[in-house]
Length: 174
Image (cartoon, rainbow, N blue to C red; front, side):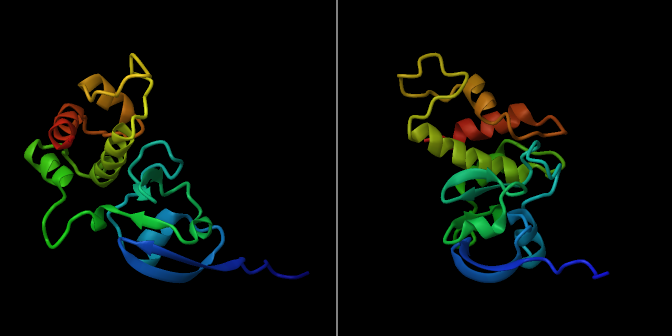
């Protein structure tokens, strides 16, 4: 009787926060585990590990995604941005500043995912994508509180900082 098979390994090259990375990975490794365990980028949190809480939200090629659900080996050539990659030259991203100014967090566990999701959501609005709460899908979306809450509904805050999160997003919106 033979022992267990060694995991399948694959090489993947991608950019994380603007830095090229080439790694040999277990083909079962999630992007979240790659970020946290191999690259020491611990801002993205492992909440539910099932894609239900949004604590691990990052941007993949500019689109928000749950890092716990993305297999790292499928991201060949992708550009991944985490919360650590938003600040430039020591200056917080405007969305990060708005979260601080509006107390858009309490314990802070969900905050990196909330901010990355909000950034992706603002891009979706700029592209004219409607949401479930959009009254007229042929009109340009308007970021009213109800619309923001609907678009951010995949990100859970156990502390209940939602009013401040919405206010921060409203302030940072173009």
